[in-house]
Picture 1 (cartoon, rainbow, N blue to C red):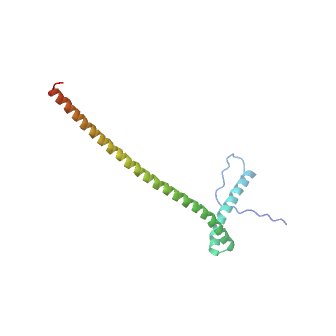
Picture 2 (picture 1 turned 135 degrees about the horizontal axis):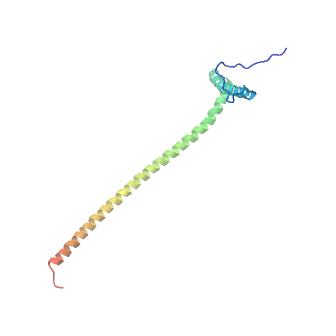
Picture 3 (picture 1 turned 120 degrees about the vertical axis):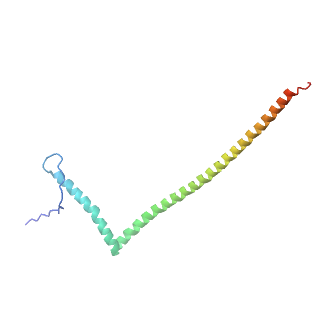
Length: 137
């Protein structure tokens, strides 16, 4: 006596046949691969949640291992964040310094322009005074 075990097929629409040919073994094997992928992907999620609640030693070991791996990654992320924050602070202080220096140069430029105007006005007055009162030479 020979018994054949058929995989349970969930009810639902069948995949369309693109070529119009009757279903071939590749179509069936493709569907089987999809079913197997879903079983591998969905079933462990359910068992992980159930095992996490049960306190299984194997699960505890896996959780510790995951915690160590994720802990190292988290530490690296924290280190990068701290480094970026220090760079941001340095850029802010340098920006403030550059702003102060530009302000100083603008102030110096304004003072130079004012001095040049005073000198130009003084020279114009001397020139006008010399033209009005031509003296002996």
